[in-house]
Length: 165
Image 1 (tube, helix red, strand yellow):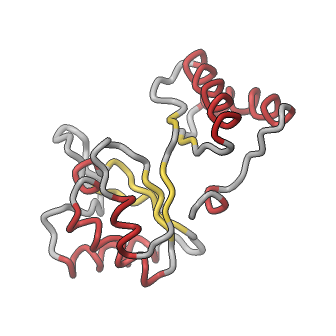
Image 2 (image 1 turned 180 degrees about the vertical axis):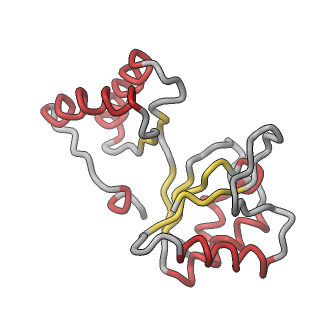
């Protein structure tokens, strides 16, 4: 579930069902439950936008406590360097993972290829890396070209759920 959470960017359009930091605990948990129910068979939740939300200790404790009851993991897209999600996950006992690299902050094939090469370096250096991207035309084209090449070099592509601790 790509969960819409409140952003610090006031110009960012809030999606229908965005969970805001000024909501009370009951409202947060009710909306979270509704969002989870809208995606049958999911195994985890990631934040969509959410820079304001993921910086708020009280708020993330509420969200992750709600996830704990469902047995879902939390994936932090790391849209802010002030994220408190790792600590909140540790406090609540929710399995957690975070983004290591974003592949398509820019939509040019050259940029995405450069990011894929960075992914390659990181994977060989650290043993694993979690990348995030969009399902855009250029991204899909670069992934289609480069994933088989990287797999041929020994990089194994897995589901996010295999990376969550």
